Length: 238
Image 1: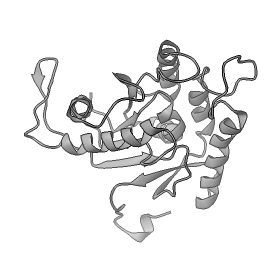
Image 2 (image 1 turned 120 degrees about the vertical axis):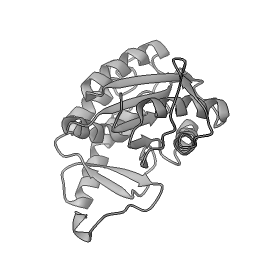
Image 3 (image 1 turned 135 degrees about the vertical axis):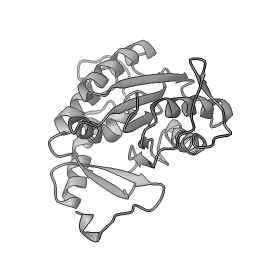
Image 4 (image 1 turned 180 degrees about the vertical axis):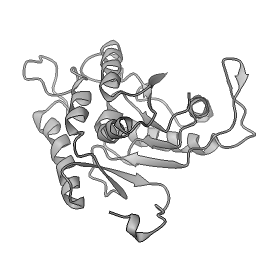
């Protein structure tokens, strides 16, 4: 199955928080979208790897993605090396996405920056024909995505590209809140974390509203680009 977009996140829920609205919008437009989680989030203070598995599957259904895979890298301890790169390369070559969306280049959680560079490097290496990989006993063809964009996470990084997600914020929030163990729940007896506060949940919406304000729409999501964003005409810019 060939995908139009593959979203890669260090942890289940990274993709939903960073680009859930963009994914929902593109799925509604008929694009084929998939999610790749690198870890099961097993070091998370709240919930467990098993609850995250269930929540990730539920969230994927809400967003309407065609596939969601998990490479089960070690949460907190994966590295950007040949072994980990090759596993991601296999997935990139399997689905041949035109666009890859991945973690913020710099963020509060150490896994986010690591995953950002790891995914980016794998996208480049995946296009080298002399790197040989196999899937289900068959050799894979080299494939390099045309574009790699990094979504914004904890830090308010200045975006290079802002996507209008007006009409999709409710679907994004439903997908985010499918991770019931992770986010605000006044009845929860689990320890509080930086992302379990009501302020954090509210911030997802007010960030989207603020980015929307900047481009004259209701809600938006921001991304940083690895290279200059090209258009055919200045009139293509909104």
